[in-house]
Structures are given as C-alpha cells and as structure tokens.
Image 1 (spheres, rainbow, N blue to C red):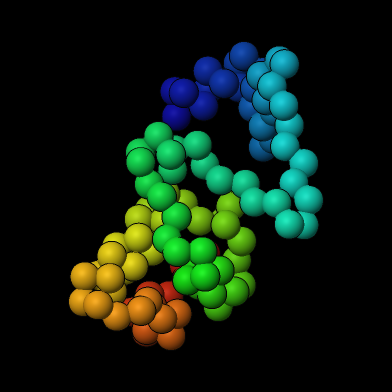
Image 2 (cartoon, one colour):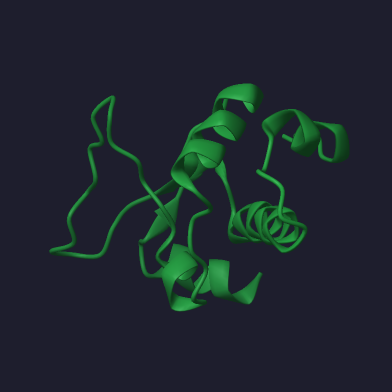
Length: 102
C-alpha cells in the first residue's frame, strides 16, 4: 500500500491509470505480437515447447501476456514431467489437471 501511495504521489499512478516513466517506450503490440513480463527471463523461466504452449493458449482462449510467471512455471513443470516419463505433452491431459482462473 505504501509503495502505491508513493507512486500516486509522484504522479506515476492516478485515477486507476498507470503511465510510464519519462522517456520510456509505450508498447503498442500488433495482432501477431506478444508481450511478456521481463521477470520471466530474470527468474530464468523459459517458455515450454512452442506447439504445446500455443495449444494451451488456444484451449484456454488467452494470449501469452495474460499469463503470469507462476502460469509459465506450471506449464514448464507439466512439460518437464511429460518429458521425464517419455511422453509427448498433450493439451487435453493438461486441461484435465488445470483450469483457468481469471
């Protein structure tokens, strides 16, 4: 709460809107672009196999920027578990164990 108050006082957050620091770029993604959290890479999280990730995103009707670092971790753990048992990760199996929480 204190950090938010400081940001509001300094003019970075106000009226439920956030704005970038002076000189920072404001992203304007196009339809085929994906925005990700820098924290994914800071924490050494990597994306699961592109096909499996795409199938999960399509199954839950979300885009990559809707996922949090914890979501990427869950996908990665599932992928690693499949890999360790020598099976191909399948979106149907993933959906049996996980559900989307909005």
